[in-house]
Image (cartoon, rainbow, N blue to C red; front, side, top):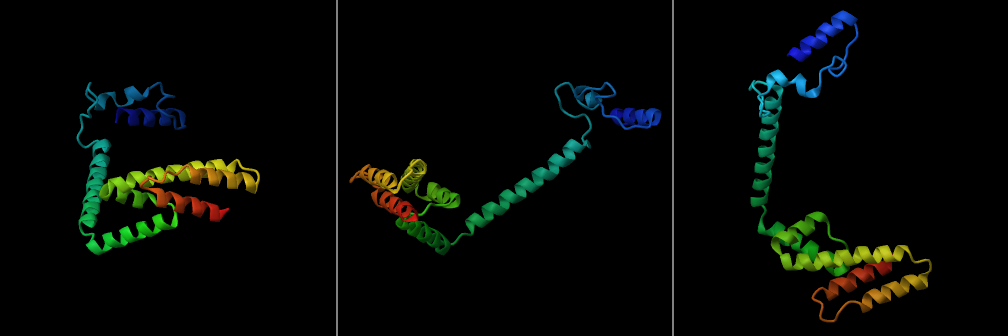
Length: 169
């Protein structure tokens, strides 16, 4: 309040609005009278409390809404998500962030395999960007295929991903 009055007085004297720093008041001094030494506001009706209460209520409402929607997911929708993820894995397409989060929560082992496949995809695409000819690109793809172990549990997903990238060339 003191800060507002000093600005009002400055406006009356000069006819020009000025900021607190132009009046010689630092940020620390502007709210000095309205705060305790530990930084808490003295006045519980301060704008800081009103905004934080509104944000807090909105935040908790969103959390409740999300938790209710997560609980209401039926087995059918979970099966649909799993079918969509499975079809993407078999076709070698990239999984969305939502699908990866679902895997991380419901199937951590498959998540680890798919994370490794996506890292390999990014690496392969980066290496293909530097290829100048089709022969160089084909050599990079062949090398990537040779790098997949026969005992790798994500072998099919890796080959599908490499095939998808090869078809996109």
